[in-house]
Amino acid sequence: MKFVINKFQIVNVLAKVQGLTGRRSNLAITENVLIQSASEGIRLTVTDLETGFEGFYPAAVEKEGAIAVSAKKLFEIIREFPSEDILINEVENRWIEIGNDKVLYHIVGMNPDDFPETPVISEVDFFSIDAACLERMIDQTTIISASGDEKRAHINGVYVERIHGEENDSLRFVSTDGSRLNCVNHLFPPDTKIPVGEGVLVPKKGLNEIAKFLDIEGDVQIGIKESNFILKKEKETIIIRMLEGEFPKYEDILKKGEDHLIGIDKLQFSKMLKRMSILATDNYKGAVFTFKDNNLSVTATNPDYGESKEDMEIEFSGEPIEAAFNPKFFSDALSVINEENVIVNIVDGSRPCIVEAAEDKNFISVIMPMRI
Image (cartoon, rainbow, N blue to C red; front, side, top):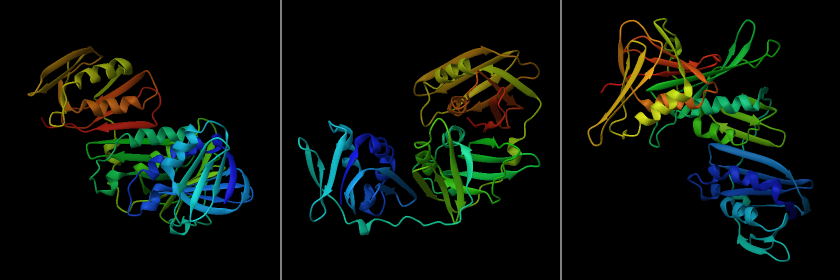
């Protein structure tokens, strides 16, 4: 294998796949990137055994071949290389030369035959979606993360549904950690029909890897086939092995009450929540929210540090409501809403609180009350 490539063709790609190659698996070779050179360029493949990436990039290929090499070291070499054109040449016993006349690295590779095979999936019904919209949907649902020792599939994954309406089809992402739930919809134009299929669970960590490759402009292709969630771009493909498990029935929790719909300035509310979270620890995460007489009062108490309290004017009348919530859950919801004003929907102190944008109703966050 021998080829010359411009560093800017692959340096950003190598940076983006570090999350996959840096993730521990049962095979050491998954820390490597598989490089395959063909007549018109090179193919880069990485996997963590759950999420796989494959991309094709132009290069001046002198000799075809394949080698697996440390993704981290290759990225560091390419990133710091002083000139644009870089020669990559396999010499003998799977040793690789990387460099030019002035700078030369000599590093060891691994047997490409030991690299896990990429799933071959045919006859996939793809549908297009705006890349920026998909990235926003991923951000709004994966912000609810799972702990490292979490085993439940519906916590580790995002539930992806294809919904077929009378006028419009839509794509829905739903995520939960048991204490809150985020739901976001993307409505397709009336003349766009997406493939029919059951809801699936896609790993959150795989979706986060997809988000790294989404551009601000343009469309991408999505396909769901044979337990795989597939994202396809012009030169790059990401395949995620879906999770097995059931997502809980969630529709009823999305129903809004009519008791109190409170408009709040997002920035002012965010700053208040941040201040009220300063004293929080793993053992003391909650704060008491009191809605009373056109005022919202938030009080946080931590026996190890002390107490904090802040008031904010709101439009609220009727019987007072007192409920305990985790302020971080509100902060997370506000951080993925791209409007200046939000609506807080609360019924009483024992039922969930709903947060959504004042105008865009495609995203909703449901926050469960706590016991303190």
